[in-house]
Length: 506
Image (tube, rainbow, N blue to C red; front, side):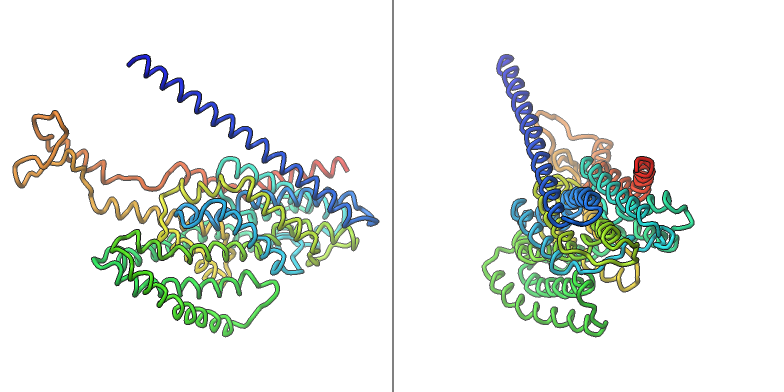
């Protein structure tokens, strides 16, 4: 027996060593593909800038932009598909493929042709009117944002790439023009969004999950309840995403009036309800009366939600992230600093392809954390998270609040997890293996080889322990919140240092 135990331990060590070796090897392969992509960006940018004065600067900026795009794919995009993967509604490869295609489509189709040169107008362009100073400031901002997101991905913290760019622009702007150049009211709104985004996302997700539990999952006849309410919930999702796409995903190419947005939302609800109700009734007729059966009804809506979230993210956030690159291109080619510039299609292509490659190479790590590590997700919970993401953005946009889609999605995951924890602890579960019925005066059951029931003190201790079940991993909560809080200041400090270094060198 002793020899067998030793052999088992040796085999485990060998398996662990093999896994570690394979992980290191895969990391090296991914790094190699990343380098090849950046070399491709260098060649592509060289062709696009042939004959232009300052082409060397543009090529370097394009490489940094490509590096930024890789990091967006590795970190930010994962939040859109993580819940769907964690709930097993779709495989990891399927999620990567859908996200890559729709992110790229959103960036290229609806990314728009005009962006602000200084993200979110946090720095007055008139204070950085010198062309060379402006170019180095934007270069520093882009590089600092990319490095910070890279570090966040390494430690497994989903962060807002837009906030990283904001921090980069802030730091470079202060280093170039002084603290007076900062638009502090705008910065105050961004700071408020750090709190509003995750809290609002979490509350809305928890609210929808509570509705689903009490009106469907906790009912004796779950199938009948599902036939009544699942079409309503899916139709709300369709309506919310229609409005979300119009307000955010297509805002750079089409800005309809509020009444038109309301009509689009109402129309999407009516069409979805007409289509989903008979489909759910047909599927439910063959299902057993179990929670898993109800959960399966949300599979297709979840996949559609992941695709639409990716499209809207590609259209809305990618242009913000590559905005500094577009600003550099404009400053070099036009010779002046403008408040708004045309976004060249080749810049969008670099961003779109880089995001897709970064997602495939490095995205699975953050996807796993968002979808599986924070709390356990099923398809009903994941559906509530996706619905929360769309509705929260709509509410924030209507109130004029700048919010982060990353913070909303992750906040929704935490909201769902803490609701699960609250409900589980509220039920006061007691381990039946050592429970004791004081009312009956005898043991219900207790461990084998025990001649006497456990003491009342032991029962109370076990009950107290059961009441403190932790269904949300606090370690991830602490890491993610810390990363959110320091994203802007960390990117700002790094950007300022890079700018000062570049100015000294050039």
